[in-house]
Image (cartoon, rainbow, N blue to C red; front, side, top):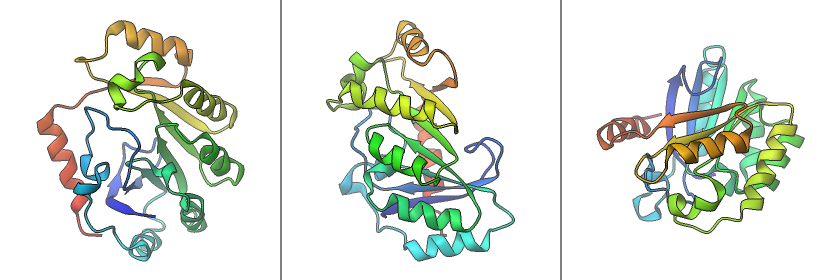
Length: 207
């Protein structure tokens, strides 16, 4: 695992749980509004945080924290994600995964191995407009497969969209509500640059 940042405590990122947030490096999207470019673009990567240091922190916070959010970047790009999440689960934490849904086979593995308790999948745009947001070609069948896996998992979940009004319209949001059945779906505002920069500072705190 290549870990690029840690938020030690949050009450808003994992519903119902005081939690830490771990950010992995690397992403297969290039979203125009990305809040964490230093986790996406290799030339902006810092030295990854030592894995054992992260795990030691989580071990020390047992009893204070209840959950761990594994976010990114895109965590499912890391083939050792199941092993990493198994070590987190061994401490007794509930685990939430933030994902863009492009590796349904990894999502299925995490579910099958009971390594995840909550899944949040980003829906960037109506499927036909994905390239406009992400800068990459994405097979819509991969995304809908991930959605089906998540829906059928029996786990708590949500689908969510960052509403970038420069490229998305109210009609696009309505199309996404239809795609999700407007169930477990929420829209979040696209943060202005100043807020993004303030949020990024959190990533660089010492562990």
